Each structure stands twice: as structure tokens, then as C-alpha cells.
Length: 419
Figure (spheres, rainbow, N blue to C red):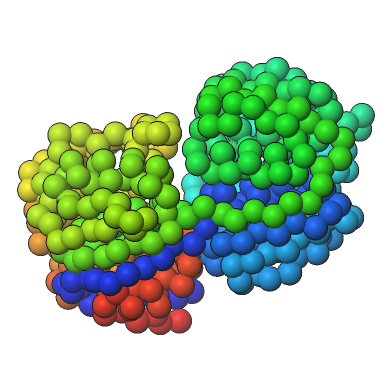
């Protein structure tokens, strides 16, 4: 386990480039299971979650070259088992994305309960319902064990919730179910769009891409394809908040303008001077101000993955802000640790927190990174605080942020990683 030591109170500045979208990389890797032919993914983020997914593929007998680099070459010529390694599954919620491809390739899928952030509070009922609609049968037991001995069949389905991974599970299964599948109330996030585009490159006929109603004409056999991942707008938004909270000036390369609209809109409401210029998202020194309410929403609403970071920013904004994340429980609980740093926080319930600022944060505490996004938020708080802050385990944050320590140092952060 690693600890990040932070000497706060320094303005960060410079230029940083984001890598591919983490939430696109995982379903695209799962999609490579659907064909025996080689697939190549470029601009892949060099993060812990991607490595775990790549090693899950290796455990299934898939050839994977380039782990730890931004280019992965995958060939699933054979799939030797329908039950991926339990230990690896327990580290990654995205392992649920293997269910559809395993059913398509082997007729069975058996995975342990997926891990990741707050696994006990995040069900996969939408995923299972979609697979059942396509002919999969659930076998009783503590794990997730499904069978489709006669193959998956096309279906018309309405998802109970616009779940991102639930939509992706349905898409992955439908791509190899010969015939037309229609998915209504589908998620529309950029990473869902990327999966649709990749499946289309592999031979599935897709219509409605980017909308909440998707039609997929599946084929019995998909072919190999190449795809360059789009930049991660959540990572870009994280760097933007770090610039704002430290009073710094950072230029962020690699994110698409259309994806950054949802980030820039909230930051500008908080009086942060920012915007796209020549393909670069720029953040300039600003004096943040509170806004009445920040509420998460389904795409293109404000993403829940950034709600912890804007909560930290609100501690440095003039006035009172209500932050409401109706999508997930527990996302905000980890931020109560900032009360010991001097933050004025009131946790109204599992979904709402009231922040009054600005308050001068104090370092000197060991902060617990209970999940990926709150971990990055606590690092941001440490960068803004007076004195030294300790954040651990750093590995939780490195699941989603490539080369984090080196890039923070390059921007002028006074930090050290201690094993």
C-alpha cells in the first residue's frame, strides 16, 4: 500500500494530456472477446483498472500484447473457460462486461460478485434482465452463473434504468445474436457511443447511436477491428478542478469539446474562467463563487464521477452550495473527512451535502481513499490545504489516473509517494 504525502498551498500550472476514456476502454476490451480475429486499441489509458481487465482476458486464454502501454493488441482465437479468475473479478466492477461475450462464445458465463467501488450497493439486475430477455438462463448460486446453450437470440427490451454498463452488456450480447435487437431507455454517455462505433467496425449494423433507442443487427461472426479511444473527459475535468482549487493555470489536451461542455458549464457557473481553445481546455486563475445547487444527471447532465471534486471546489467558493448526487449512495460520505481539515460541510443524507465557503483547509490528516473519485478529490483538497496531508491507499486512485504522481509533479505539486 502506498501513501501520497502532499505539501499544500502551491499553485499548479502547466500543460497535461489525458489518455483514453477509462469507461470506454473496459467495454472495448470485453468486445474483443466476440471475435477470433485480432483487434487493436490505441490511446488506451495506462491505469490499474485496464490492467486488471487485460489480465482477466489473459486468464480466459486470450492473447493480449502491450499491457502497460497505450496500445493493446488482442486476439481471442480460443476461450478456454467461461469462469474468469475470482480474485481479479473481485477487484473490478467492469468485469461484469464479460458476461455477454462469454455467453456468446461459450454458451455459459460464471463470474464471482464484481468488486470496485461500493460493490455491495451497486446491483447488476439491469444487466441480468437484458441477458435473460435474450435467452440466457440464471443458474442458482451465490455467484452470477448464466447459461445459453442454444445461443443468444435477438430481443426487444426496455431497461429498468439507463445504466451505462447495463446498456453495454446488452450491446455486447446483441452484437452476436443473429437478428435485430432493440434497446430502449439506453444510456447515451460518450463511452457507450464508443462501444457502438467499435461494434459497428466489427461488423454489427448499428442505428440510433447516441440516442436512448438503439437497434443492433447482430451477426453470427464478427471480425477484427482497430479503434483509437477518445480522451477521458472525467480525467480532464479532474485536472480542471485541481487548477481551479489551487488558483492555478492548466492547459488540458486530449478531451473532445463536445464532452467538455458538461464540465465547463458547471465550472463557469462557479466563476471559474475556463473553456476550449484550439482543441485545448484551458483553466485560468479564478475566484470561485458558490452556486445554489449542483445536481448530477444522466448524460448530458453533470456526471456523478465529478461530483466529489466539485464538492471540494465548493469549499473554496464564496457562499453556500448544495451538491446533490441522486444517482449513487455513499459517493459523498468519504468527503466528511474534510471536516477535520476545516471544511464547513453538512451531510444532509446519502445523496446531498451542503458546503459553505471559502474555508482555509488544514493539512496533517491521513485521508482514506474509499473509492476512486473521492480519492482524487481528497488529493485535490490536500493540494489546496496549508501544511502536509497524507492520502492512502494511493493505489485506489491509480486505478483511474495514469502516471498520477509524475504528472502532478510536472504541474508543480510538492508531493512524494511513500510505499
